[in-house]
Figure 1 (spheres, rainbow, N blue to C red):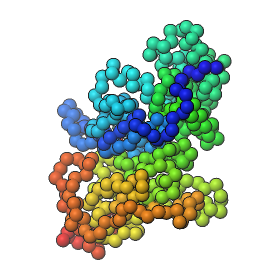
Figure 2 (cartoon, rainbow, N blue to C red; figure 1 turned 135 degrees about the vertical axis):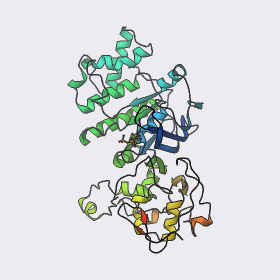
Figure 3 (tube, rainbow, N blue to C red; figure 1 turned 180 degrees about the vertical axis):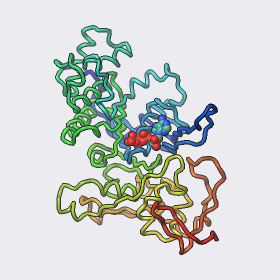
Figure 4 (cartoon, protein in one colour; figure 1 turned 30 degrees about the vertical axis):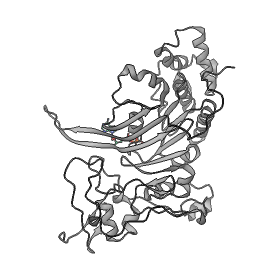
Length: 417
Ligand SMILES: Nc1ncnc2c1ncn2[C@@H]1O[C@H](COP(=O)(O)OP(=O)(O)OP(=O)(O)O)[C@@H](O)[C@H]1O
């Protein structure tokens, strides 16, 4: 049987050559306006700040982080469904910034999205055949003819649905089958990249594996690239080639998936990993679990310096006051800690006690050293990339009487020196 999606022979090697998608320095701010007749802008939600990554042919890049960290906004900017406030998205070398709908049309064929909720994203009044035929009709590839109908049946078979069930409605299918309908819709136009926004989060764990396996098979067969968005590191560990960890709109760590799980170096990544259940109940009981306290700060007014410091166990328990000054005053750059492995933490250090799969001696030397001295001695006054406009702040000095309050903020009764 001929394939609905044609490839040029062998599946290309992963992560090689020119990237198909380049995201460079992308930020997205949503303005907050006052109520009333004159709706003045009173602030911004800093949803995504200075995010960069590449995706190569046949590669899966996963974006992971808690709810509200900016994953979906990043996906929508990539698809040009919303415009970036700053930065650039390039598809096969072509800058998408400001492209008209007409010019975006060929890109929209190449880059498709699968949504999280297969219940909400499918029109309940349409049959499965109509749902899958819709993108073909919009792009003029199906006018009710037999060839178009055959394509729809072929797509159904490719995603593991019975082609005889085309006259049924979405509500007659289970959650996993509905997500397969969503995937068939996304595949209809022979895309090259799929943005998969939490594609299995709404499904039972037993069903998740089937959908993940399907995505892997489709990638293998058609050389697809995936931008896979998820809050679940155990799913990501299975499917990712590379991982981008986000916190409060920023990338805090990025590496190849094996490298990230071998050397988790940012305290936030370490906390996420420590929540992955271990299959061995004894190891699960004995393991190190890092619990993050407090809520994620508001993206309207993110903390100065390191955004994670208000919840960072290392900041609260391990650093001295001079080191904390760095976290409070200086935004940590996304620096290379191991080869090809970047983390945005002044005091990043790989931990191997979080998962049971790595040996101590696998930890190589970190490339960076921790900063010493006070940040005021260094270039501490540069403004943060995504901060509201304003003059650079003076570095804050912390004395011995400084404590971290229950919200993770530094507090002191003493006057600033
Ligand atoms: N249209 C919008 N207007 C204002 N704020 C928005 C808008 N869309 C998203 N946000 C805010 O931007 C931040 C990032 O949201 P986003 O949906 O990208 O996060 P997420 O990591 O995908 O979370 P989730 O997994 O819950 O979807 C959140 O604080 C959210 O409230």
